[in-house]
Length: 470
View 1 (tube, rainbow, N blue to C red):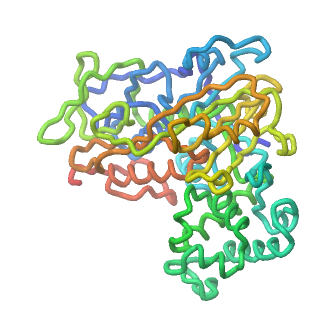
View 2 (cartoon, one colour):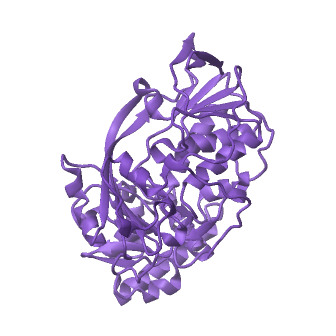
View 3 (cartoon, rainbow, N blue to C red):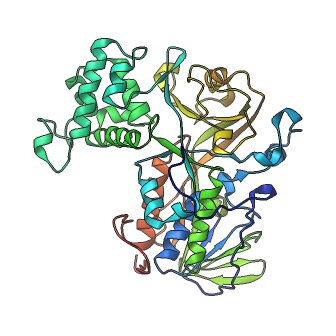
């Protein structure tokens, strides 16, 4: 099921580089320089170019994406992980587009609204992810998100739990922060989520999948926080599901590399310039603020700098680690009704962990693999000295696995808000396999860079902002 119409489709060469022409106009004086072509950097580059800023985008790599690159053909994945192959059973290598950090979009989520607002949807096709599942007692179960599904979810809830969950779902769908009459004596700013769940007499199992697989909380701390945010998330999930059954998630045809290039095109349309395969020699400072970037002996002056953590290692700190395991399969995941794509969340309490484990599955149906082939990616926050052992329960769900590729990366966050130096650094990508927290980082960076909120209600075109006084 295709849910948007493409305007133009770009292609990728070996290493994921674009065949679309990059604009490499010399910009020795610009408003903003962006280092790195990760998803967040490309989105901010597009937004700021669209708002009238003169943007120069530089990447040391010959391809888009950086840490979040999409690799094609399949041989590029093997080269990156320094393993032999692939063998002939994998089909033609050029039919594969493997996202190193795959994340799904909620159909009614803020990032999709941003895509529509900026009209980047002209460059993309999306297809629905066919299932949303949660792990319980060694088996995966369909996540109910509507009244009808709540009553049909026989293997996940008992009859009384179904009725209680249905009442909570109806309450969340009708809840309006601006209309006290819809609150039914629930104060969203004072009542905790734990107390809200107790009000509806939900059992522990129902609380677990509601909090982690529907509201998409990544830790148990939400239970003791005001319930307004959880109600908003439940409603967002259900509204996304109403857009595109049988799951609330969508994913780009040909993978996330198309999204990176879509925002790069948006930037280029509004005068942004790109320099790929360009090494950064030095970030030039003056009076505590960024003044220029020196690349291969040439000086590019700017007022502000945006970059991913790899360009400024002294300006970030480590707050954790993330393990990701890319698994190539020739079969759908068992107990998922033979779907070609799905999300599976394994709540932490099911595995005696502090962090959930996430599994994203895409396949030839999204044009990211050869016919009959699947790509399943397992991710979680590392909690021990043996990360691969931590994800073993997830890998067992995927057996048999044709080949797997394991990576462990540091989770890095900026040391400061960047307002003094005018150097704004994005956070590393977390273990979650949806974009909601990444959008929050984009919105926060946009606020700090421009001094204004990222507004999706009206056109941003040619409305120039400045943060020189921040």
